[in-house]
Image (cartoon, rainbow, N blue to C red; front, side, top):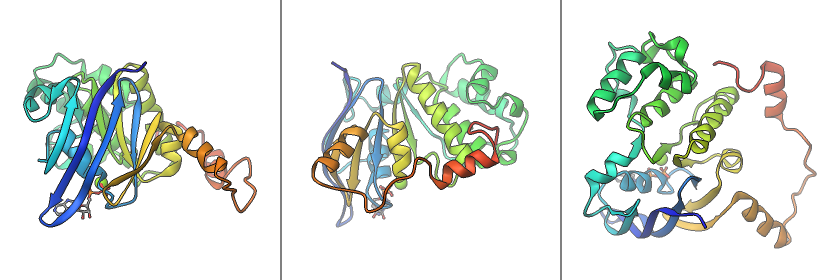
Length: 253
Ligand code: ADP
Ligand code: MG
């Protein structure tokens, strides 16, 4: 049996009189990639930021690795990795210097080159963030979540706006991180991403969880209910054609 590392119980978030999150409950298992899947405005970022201790909740109970969010937010901060907003990167510093700076702030002994190698950005060590491509920026942003050697990392739509190669490269990175033992919570509105990447997904719509299971189980349940695709599926799609023509999937972007 998997250990539960995050428990969210009856979480509610109101912005004034608007109910953005309407009493959701879910558990995240240690070592899994857990997806919050939903359309824009569903309440994914709100939920994530509340668990990250960055946003106050209206009501509900949250436990992270045995710690109560209401009582021990500082302890929770120490064991989670949060993506920093790119506006928080000092523009004058290169990637190496930024990692050194953040390691100092976190009081962590990190080998910056080793971390950059992990996210495939060793060649860019002396580059500034603004000189990176979209995919490289996102990989750097993922690297910054790892600086405090967290048990759990949170990724909020990390592939939005990336081209197919950069997306796939990020997916491989997220899998590597999970495979090295870190629990990952990720939000996305891309179904293919959730299907490929997530061990389990909660589908969230208008502030409510409307389904929660493994992608396989969700699909099997739908098929069992009599659903059939209107059109026969081909063995490849246009994205496969594109990737095939423009270079292998993990090309440096
Ligand atoms: P998602 O990340 O799924 O796109 P969000 O959690 O960002 O959704 O937003 C959920 C809902 O809450 C949206 O309708 C959004 O407009 C609203 N919302 C988000 N942040 C605020 C805020 N600070 N003040 C008021 N409404 C907000
Ligand atoms: Mg969002």
